[in-house]
Amino acid sequence: MLKHRKKKTHLMAILNITEDSFSDGGLFIDFESAINHASLCIKNGAHILDIGAQSTRPGASEVGAEIEIKRLLPVIKELRLLHPKITISVDTFHHSVAKEALNEGADWINDISGGRHDPQIFNVIAENGCSYVLTHSRGNSKTMDSLAKYSNVVLDVKNELSKQIDLALSTGIKDEQIIVDPGIGFAKNSDQNLSLLRNIEEFISMKYPLLIGASRKRFIGSVINESDPNKRIYGTAAVAARCVVAGVDVLRVHDIKPISQVVKMIESVM
Image (cartoon, rainbow, N blue to C red; front, top):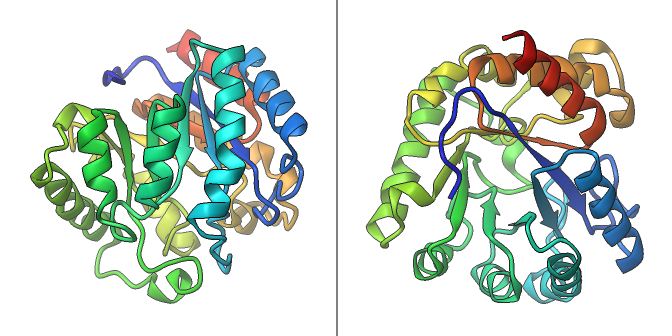
């Protein structure tokens, strides 16, 4: 389990074995590219690999559990052999995918729906006793942009997270299994994402380890006027700095080496 530690931020590397992820879709869809990229991320300082076979960008279509499993299992199996000590997280909202991935050697499940898409995923998590990233979101990839309406985005997100946490606990999941993610970019507009980041401490106060996944996202592009997701590294670094200072436990990022340097420098001067 990941212990909540305010002075250490872990880096979660993103490995999208998809055709249509917003900034790296298609780059790692084949087996060899996926393995090579994951190994490079580990070399560059990743503590956790987050492997996803379903794009969760706004507008993405679902590929289905069978395709996710077909893409994921060979990669998980090979990475577990090559890097037996690395923490492997699987980004899925299907209980069948979660079950197969855990059986193949995955350690975490990262569910961007927080159990809303497939409530049976809670049973899989409870039975396996694994870590579970419970993310705030609304709707799905097709509808989430239309659901970014809040009375107070910080309080509303906290309350909706708490509701899903209670549901998870009611199925037998333990407190120590849960990692909270406020869902930057999921059913939030740019101003709402910035409000969440300004108020990170509100989510740290929930007493669960906190994960933030803002890397290269659209709101960063809006702030720095950069339409190319691959050129948003400085904006991503600024968000990372804010998170490290606040005591965020996990940063989910594409650019491991430079963000690792940002984290090390901030932790050193702090």
